[in-house]
Amino acid sequence: MYGVCLRYCSSREDAEDLLHDGFVKVFEKIGSFKGQSALETWMTRVFVNEAISRIRKRKSRGEWFSLDDDTEIADSQEEEEEPQTAWDADTVMQAVASLPDKYRIIINLYAIEQRSHKEISELLGIAEGASKSQLSRARAMLREALHKK
Image (cartoon, one colour):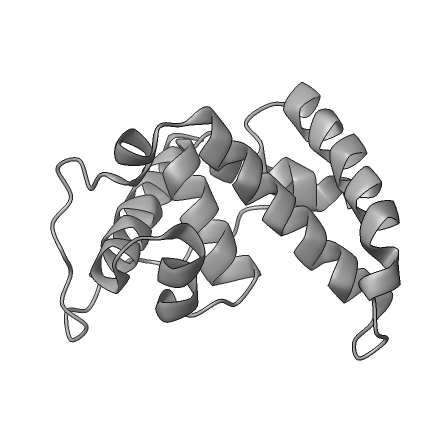
């Protein structure tokens, strides 16, 4: 679960706090675990929800979910082709951790948690287009961070 926390936090200290709070939440809610999925899957969902809840509390809703200078990306628009470069997992995770909160959360929910844009928009209270736009921006920022390494 610490790995999950690291994906959603910008520092190890924040990840450790989230780990603690997440386990407290797991122990509080263990009675609601119905066994329809693996315990690890259920716990991961609890930790992800706790991470998102913490971030929402820290940020004002307008600041956190604003599109900034992003523009909505059409579904049919394809990203430009780039040569494939192999990076080790630690390098990629460090680059993801360096992203601003809203981009780190979107990329984690979409790429790692395999959530759809519709699910992300409902979870974060943003438009689907904003989810797509922020994912595109997150990928560009991640690409740039990796190329610098």
